[in-house]
Every structure is written in structure tokens, then in C-alpha cells.
Length: 330
Image (cartoon, rainbow, N blue to C red; front, side, top):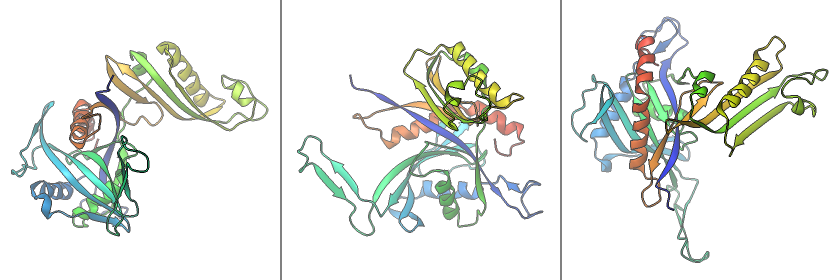
């Protein structure tokens, strides 16, 4: 049976400007500035230009990036209305930029293999020239009003490269661009309401000294190791028992005789048929979405639709956070 969709995960960031100069004009008492209008205007310029007038931006010796596809959506409640390409965009109205950014590395060649051919005949190599290289696409969703950026993890253009790109396209005027992860106040109670748990990732640092090998981690303590990573998957998880086990780990970390540092607890599962990911340590906001495959392949237009869906699915939480912070980030 041919698979029609593939699950994709997304991370949420909040971007802003920061300075350590006390009393700097335009920055608040913490040295932060949330005005991202220069990035907004630069993306509008890209939105209105013809592709044949665009060029890649050089980030370092062999790495170049550039936007290949871009869309704009006005936000109205829980709906997103597309803006026609090339039309005037009212930047005062809340909107989303959804775009694909291409990273090219001129140190790497690209290889295409025709699997119906023999091994010695089906391989074709591209990008051998000095100014050519392999490309990797990354979809981005950006709201310039609240500073939210959504990216797939481990993508070609991560958040640090994206901020560098924003710096260049805004005329190198946005110095001090920073990012932070968006926090989601998930807890063990959220897990109790999950329909299923599909896998559990745990990483701990063992702090029990040599004289005390008691506690729920005694099996691992007895061999005197210092760290442990555990990935549980493939079974029919009993949700309430899973929550009890996780609670025991957290109690070992928080108790009077602290025995563990819990570095990572990530739970994947479903709730009402929707894929859920919960991070109990950093509480970072994480989202999942099923992307439709075209000819069994992931294509850019479907990924762009996916990252927009992810923003809209979390819009209420983001709006509330933005309001609670006085319109300064999320």
C-alpha cells in the first residue's frame, strides 16, 4: 500500500533584537526591541519582485541562501486569507509570511540516481563547477507582529542562519537579532488525557554517589554509570502507568536527596486522532503535521501549506501569550 502522507515535526522560536548598551534608544529596560518591520519590508520587497531579478545571499565562503517561493496571508480570527502575488500588502494588518528558503553549498555536488538502471549507469552528478553546489530547501513561517518563527528541526537553514539572512536582506541594519524557544505550559496532566503514547525519549544524568545505589534507577546505578539515554517504543503504552513512571523520575530529581538530573523527557502520541509531542523538560512548543506526498515525494508547496497549518493550529495559544506579554513577543 502506497503511503499518501508523511509526518513532519516543527519547532517554534521567538525572534527579537537585544542590546547590552544601557538606555539605548528604542530598547526597553531589558535591552529588547520587538520591532521587526525592517524584515517585514524586506520580505514584502521579495514578494513583489520577479524571480529573474533575484540573487542568492552569501552567508559564508561556500554557503548561499535565497527565497525561492513566498506567500503572504492576512490573519482574521482563526482564518488565513491568501494575498495575491504582486499586490499591495497592508503591513499594518496582521499577516504571515510563508516561504521556502534554499541553502546552496558550493563545496558539495548533487547526485541523482535512476533506480531502474544498473548501478554503473543510473548515477548522475551535478554541480561540479566552482560556483555550483547542492541545494537543500527549508520552509519557514514568520509572523512579524509577534516575532514567531516556525521551522522544521535539523533543516538546511536553522534559526541562526535564518537570523543572519534576515540581517543581510534588511540592509544590515538589524544588529543584535536573537531567538528564544517558544514555551508551552504542558505538564503531566496533559499526558493523562492523551489517547495513545507511541514512544518515550528520556535522558538522565545519574547523581547518586557510590555509597547509595537505591531508588528506581538502582539497576543502572549498580554498574556505576553516569548517564543514560532511554528510548521506549513499539509497545501498547499504558498511559496512567507511563505517567506514574515519569513522575517517579521527576521526584528523584526534585526530592530532598536529589539523585538525578533529568535532561530530557519527550513523549510522542495522539489525542483525538491528532499527533502530539510533549516536552516536559524545556517545555518547548513542538507541533506535528501530516504532509501529503505527490508521486510519493515531499514537495515544497505541500510543505509550505503544512507549516502554515501548524501556525494556525497553535494561533490561539500564541495570541494569548502575545497579549499577556503586552504585545512584546510570545
